[in-house]
Amino acid sequence: KNEVEQSPQNLTAQEGEFITINCSYSVGISALHWLQQHPGGGIVSLFMLSSGKKKHGRLIATINIQEKHSSLHITASHPRDSAVYICAAHHNTDKLIFGTGTRLQVFP
Amino acid sequence: GAVVSQHPSRVICKSGTSVKIECRSLDFQATTMFWYRQFPKQSLMLMATSNEGSKATYEQGVEKDKFLINHASLTLSTLTVTSAHPEDSSFYICSARDQGGNSPLHFGNGTRLTVT
Image (cartoon, rainbow over the protein chains, first blue to last red):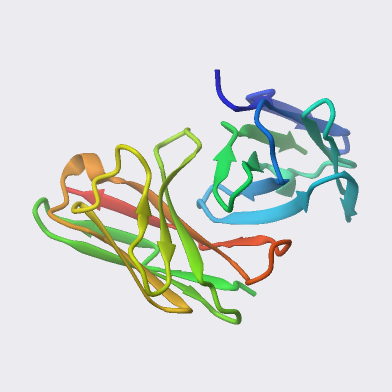
C-alpha cells in the first residue's frame, strides 16, 4: 500500500463542473503539496499546506490532519485545467512522498 | 517566471555516452536540491538529494556511480547520467526550495532523456 494514495486516478469533466481530487496519507507529515503537471512535463506547485484551507483563484485545497486527508477542488473547471494533479507529503524532512497522480481532462 | 531553470529540456544520446543535466535556482539560493525520475504514466520517484558543498544522498536502489550529482554552488546542481543505456531513458526533473522551512518547492521543467 502506498503511503500517499490519490483518487480518482482518472477524471473527465465537462467545462464548468466542480471537481474534487482526494489524497489520503498514512505517515506523519509536516506539510502537504498539491502539484500540477502539464503534458509537457513541467510541474507547478499549487499549494503547500499544513492545516485548514487555502484558496487561489478557482482552486481550493483543504487538509484534515486528524483524518490524514486532503482535497483539491477546482471550481468552474476549464479545458486549460487539464493536467495531472499530484499530492505529495513532506514526511518530517524535505523529502517528498508522491501520490500516483490524478489525470484530469476537462472537455469544452 | 520560472524560478528553477533546468537544461536541456530534451536530449537524445547514444548508448555509452554521458549526459549532463543542469538545475539552476534563478533568484534564490538553494542549499538543497532534489532530483527525481519519472517513468511514463507513473509518479515521480526521488533519486537523490543534492547538498551544496557535500556529497549527495542517494535513495535506495539508485546507483551513485551511474547518476553523478554535483552541487558546486548555491544556485547550481548537476546530474550526470554516465554510460547511458536505453533503460535510462526517462523524464528527469529537479526541485529546489528557498531557504526557510515554509517556503514552497520550485520545480524545473524537466529533461526528457532518450538513449538510443
